[in-house]
Amino acid sequence: MENTFKVTGLSFKSTPIEVREKLALDEIQAKELMQFINNNTAATDILILSTCNRTEIYYNFSTDLNNEIATGLALIKGVDKGIVASYLSCIAENHDAVKHLFNVSMGLDAQVVGDIQISNQVKKAYQWSADENTAGPFLHRLMHTIFYANKRVVQETSFRDGAASVSYATKELIEDITAEIANPKILILGLGEIGQDVCRNFVGSKKDIVIANRTAAKAESLGAECGFPTLAFEAALSDLSTFDVVVCSVARDEPTITKGSVSQIEILTPKFFIDLSVPRSIEMTIEDVPGALLYNIDNIQSKASETLNKRIAAVPDVENIINESLVDFEDWSKEMIVSPTIKKLKGALENIRQEEIQRYLKDASSDEAKVVDTVTKSMMQKIMKLPVLQLKAACKRGEAETLIDVLNDLFDLDKESEPSK
Image 1 (cartoon, rainbow, N blue to C red):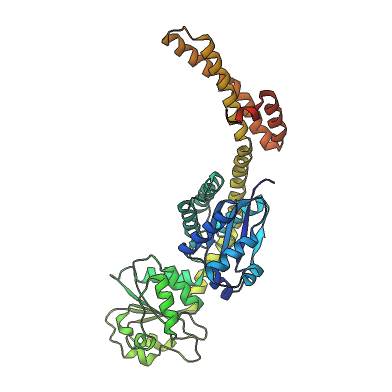
Image 2: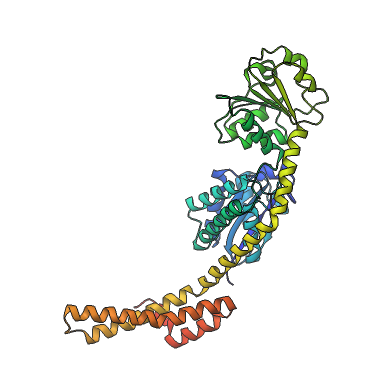
């Protein structure tokens, strides 16, 4: 049975966040799973993409590897295999799996349409695959086709413009308001889902980020993941004066930051407060304090919603680019089928050429031999040209197998490919 590209995994569409968290893979774990699949199956072109929204394993094999992948995931993550298997699903058709990876990579399949982070996450997954030598010619070509398509999306559409999620819009707002501040210090107070997303959006930035949460263990875990220092919750509240920006998303009925607490701060330069909570966690009246500026969730959602509408309008343009790229990639994939036959045919003709040269040029001078060698090589290339063109054309028509059989019979190519004894 012929190998086909497949994807086995889970995503936010059908798997709750508490399960996704348990099955998320870091670099070491992803590489460990790749080697597990590599050592226990004959799959090729293995790629693992694991984000907060999905854990997906791509591979080339004749049948789905749901059982093997569930086993590997369960071993690596220390969870029950039955639970893992119950959430895994497989896209087994080659075209559908390839298109799925295109859609994921472009951000069409993201929680926030056009998510800018997914492109870098896919590149990182590809690098891990290359590191572990699990990427074959098929995956290399596919990934570079995807990267080129992504470049076209950025250059030719408005799909990636602006911030379409509250957490990323928050990051962009902070970038804007601190543009004139040297080494701004930012406190992220409260680490619910949106607070965590804001933190993760700042990974890799040069901003001085400090995080705090009522549950210290949660802050320490996220701090270790993102590389940010932590501060005890009460200590952070009593030390607001040291921060240029305070992002608050604490879920409670009463405001966490009040006008009274802000009025006690000596504000010599503008201090920015960003409230991401509903109900609000920062009193609106803090703006009565000179130098205190407040942004709330409505300000940020308005910006995100406007961008999201623009992205949705650009989706047809993105799909056109994907479809064009799919045609090119699938044409190449079909040509891969005939590559072994072309190689065998070249080998067969080269053997004939060498045999005849050895037979007739025993007494020829080096100059004569060079001329004959050049002429016969040129003749062989011209003889090869038509069969190669016909094979490639037959690929596009889906008729390559018939022509391959004819060439095998005419030139006894199967015999040619056997090692000489």
